[in-house]
Length: 267
Image 1 (tube, rainbow, N blue to C red):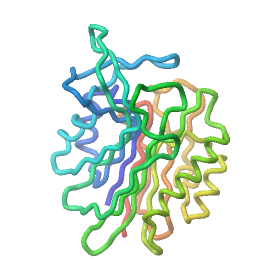
Image 2 (tube, rainbow, N blue to C red):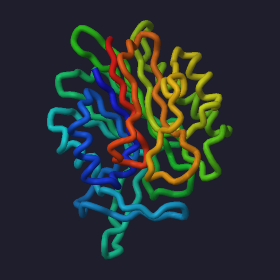
Image 3 (tube, rainbow, N blue to C red):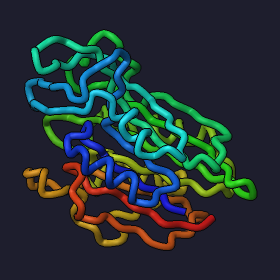
Image 4 (cartoon, helix red, strand yellow):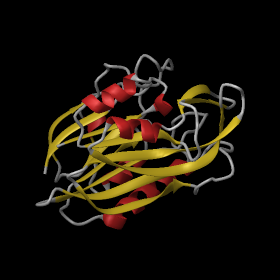
């Protein structure tokens, strides 16, 4: 089976992102920085704050779903605010994470919650914004396994450990153990916004998870579209029951300022 995780950057690199999603061959596709349009919207909207000025797909959830007709989509909003159309008019928008599951796979259980804050429905607000997590039990028929993904806290000061990130680590562990079964394969992925020496990784090791990015010698999870020197952000962790066949962070094609995490595995 193939699981792919990517911070989709709100679909800034469209239509290349859509072409990539359709062709990557994922059985499970996990995306962070996904938009959903709660009202009819133009194809693109503008998001701006003190740190960023970005062109975003207005409904990346629908855009990717159209490219993956044989999949079931599941969306977890973290916040609802507004973005501007070409005339400067405010258009309601939701921002969060989502995953797409191949239709012949069964979603047995799903937990959606927060590793920081709670749903913010009255505007994007100040950093750090709420951060969602999705934890799913998936069945192939003969076997079940667990998949979790999230978008970790962003701190304008950097990716170093903080009290908020320590609390986030506990929230991740708690969310995963809600559905955890002894001996069941578990995969955790996402843009964690952490450095490799974060105390989060020993905490996740306590529940049996090992990171593949650092242990397999990868030193860059970003593309050339990201200009800053710190190259770590994304991680993929597995339990011992996951039989890894291959793992890679391909630099091409560039469909975001993050590289995708591509895991081929057996159960």
